[in-house]
Length: 391
Ligand SMILES: Nc1ncnc2c1ncn2[C@@H]1O[C@H](COP(=O)(O)OP(=O)(O)OP(=O)(O)O)[C@@H](O)[C@H]1O
Ligand SMILES: [Mg+2]
Image (cartoon, rainbow, N blue to C red; front, side):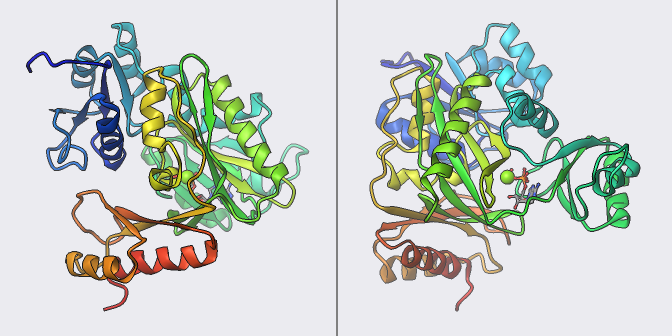
């Protein structure tokens, strides 16, 4: 590689998915010297990034070599094993977020333990290794009242898009999950099934200087464990809950020493918000910010990991709605793409360059305006049409 005129340090992102792709896109305008460590040349970011290192984005040798070639390394997923992260840091690699922060996004048991220490509002939970633990948790044991069935069982590590989350109605269903987890040596936790009115998320960016910028609290609409739509800001959320959620996100980012973007997924209950999980990277619940905020979460992540002053998280419209584009049965999206553009010129379509497979996140659409109900309909309409729901 020839020596280029570098105005900012070299940022490397581990993982070649759509989050890397969109971070790269934000980095172009900033003039950031950005490159990607991707496992496959057909990965979403590898298809567009001018500077791609092909290698194992979870393996010691490749992540270490990548870190040595960059001033700052960040991540588009949380799957780099902890021993690899440790070895990279010990060799002088600069990881943002660092290993000590990432641990809490990689492991739901650790996250729950830490949230309890911080007294962050959380569902009741416990680590479970046997069926007795689960039934004790649900039905009560050792003088402690049970949560009742159903119970939510979760793999502590490796889950995404609801894979690794099981809602079990009773001991029989619980046994299946516990046995399978034991066979696969996956640590499990049980959580009380929260009686929530809706799901929320909030993004906060934090730089190594300690500057933070927090985005408005959004509503995430999940179906089958997958986020389908995001409404920013969450309509009709009380100011008390909105401030509580934002304050919580800031406190968590500070307490865990997060650098970069932290997404906190929450449940809204009758009188509070409850932490569901944490992600330390740009997150699906923040894609609306590409058009909907002065500074997108992707630009903000780059600013934060580079320790630059953060940009304004102010919104550009009263409401922004994002709908995920999931692949349908018919991979010929292009004809429908023309139709969607013609039908609603205000809809912005984002594709990730991924092959179309049923249920796979292949892109998203965004639309901004005044009436969130109307925006939700238009975003759903566009995403559904692109998927091939209507012929
Ligand atoms: N304790 C709970 N009570 C009720 N519903 C829950 C609970 N935990 C999870 N869920 C439901 O399951 C979904 C997925 O759970 P979670 O976010 O923990 O899993 P994940 O697969 O890691 O998600 P992601 O795709 O965000 O990484 C949540 O969005 C929510 O709808
Ligand atoms: Mg989740």
